[in-house]
Image (cartoon, rainbow, N blue to C red; front, side, top):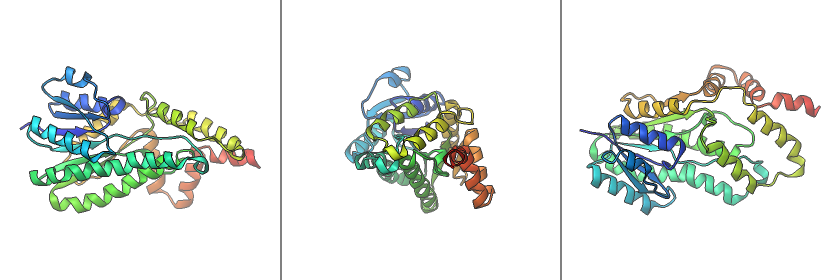
Amino acid sequence: MTNTVLITGCSSGLGKMTARHFAAEGWNVIATMRKPEPDLANEYPERVLVHALDVSDPASIDAAIRAGIERFGGLDAVVNNAGITMVSVFEATPAEAIRRIFETNVVGLMNVTQAALPHLRQRGSGTIVNVSSGVGIVGIPLLSIYVASKQAVEGLSESLSYELESQNIRIKLVEPGAMRNTNFAATGMAASQAAAVPDDYKAYFDHALRSMIDYPFPSTEEQSVVHAIHAAATDPSHRLRYIVGPDVEEYARLRWSTSEDQYLEGMSRLVGQLAWRETAK
């Protein structure tokens, strides 16, 4: 029997690549996005159903799931990929922007998960893959809202991994590093225009932004993230985390294999904080 996966955020970037990969691997794919585009369905007319889905609109989520089940006969996996980011100083970040990020990255993910769970439970098994981030395990300056949203996803996912084991449903976390060839970073930079930088922060903001641009790690390959998502969706084990990228490997080493003092010193070096302290003396 052919498996069916629902993937959110398939209009471009990682979501679109993931939908293509699952279809090429023989899966039926419910490729969802806020404004449906026919590209994926044209490429894989027998395998892909493109459907509108806004993670903040429960009715659209239910409609996409129903349409996918009617087309393919069931639902076996969900990939919660949709997400947004923002580069900003927390103090000056508009409340509306904070709510939008959490509504998409956290509440939206919860909405999709809650809508899918009854179908997976009735089927007797299933897998939910939550695309998190390396910042789900560490903090990064100028990304505080995005970091907070991804760490919320991490806590939710771990909690659900225990809870849903009773229903033979697996929860997986894919934690990618920085992917510079997708439009995700550009979108985040564009969103930052909504938050003016207070004068007192400008010198630090410029320094931290340069440190972010002069990232000390190679870019994480998008295709390696796609493969990790597919591996997570097909892994029958109780493994929770799938780390992808040299930066996240270092984050994980610092976070889980060193003391708190060593962790903070290491992260301060990586994000340029040590250099800032020297210039601020």
